[in-house]
Length: 167
Image (tube, rainbow, N blue to C red; front, top):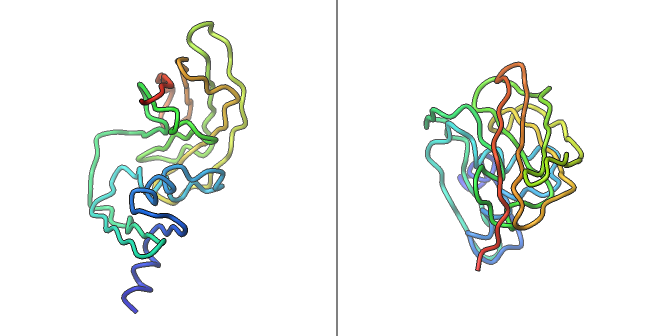
């Protein structure tokens, strides 16, 4: 009964070899329409967490909202240098407060000011914060990209991501 209760309030992963691998899966959340795992891991008021791992299965208890943050948003990949491994299919922007369900996203390559096209995914509210996600067509190592998210709730927020390789 305790295991079922724990699993019912956790992110779950199967087929991994370490608990660290499960965290990578949660944050990547590749092509998961809700981005629910990532959104809980990056949730601004996330408080205590619990990590469990057995065999090839992991769980991460993430439903404690006793934490706090002064940040109004969180992005993935985050601003600044971002290892290529963090720039997978879907990028996301998450509000730690009001809904941004109708936010728009633009992205340009800083070097030449060219627009980067991509598919914007409407992510339903819930799962650790309101989010918008997009799948950019250009994610080149060594390039910097300026992302601008515009929403009625947060206004216009711009930040830059530089894709780097890690030795």
